Image (cartoon, rainbow, N blue to C red; front, side, top):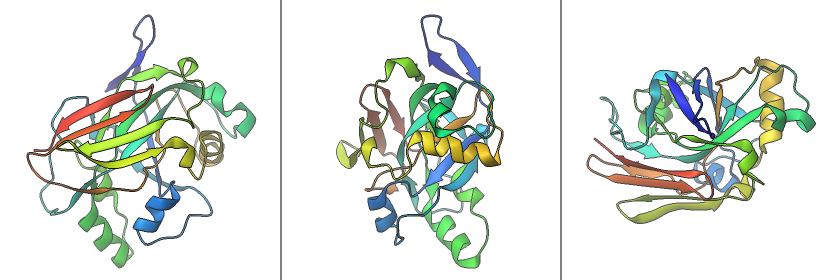
Length: 218
């Protein structure tokens, strides 16, 4: 599976690993009953979870509480390991809009049992993803308005300035553990206002200057 990077030649990049941050906005951590984390919380999604703009989000069997989470996504453009924060942006090829769809009931049950919660985050269609805009067209990725509405009602509205861990810190941290490669995608966390969606709902998400997503829940 590949994603589009919106350049003059409309380059396509094959998706590799999808890294995701949990609770990277203080108000979201609070609404989840947690304190702001002292270090990045990392989980993964399979590339098979990705769908393009306009495709249906299909709720998986076994969950009665699927939540929306809108996020700024980062596309890695070259291989790096132990990347200094001062050099991190040299590895960014582009920015996009992503949804981290989450089976909240399955996740909470797994957490209570001390089990992994990959199923809650990695099911098919759980990673809607916009095309990426080239990194050079975004003057400051931490000064972007981020919004999500369901059936026309705004639920999430914030700014990427509210990230706890900035993109350079995230990339540097990840690269101490994993070798980052071209086609890796980072979901940088969601602001407060996450909530349940039901079959038939329409989700619209946007990040100013980056792009938008429009999906029906099925």
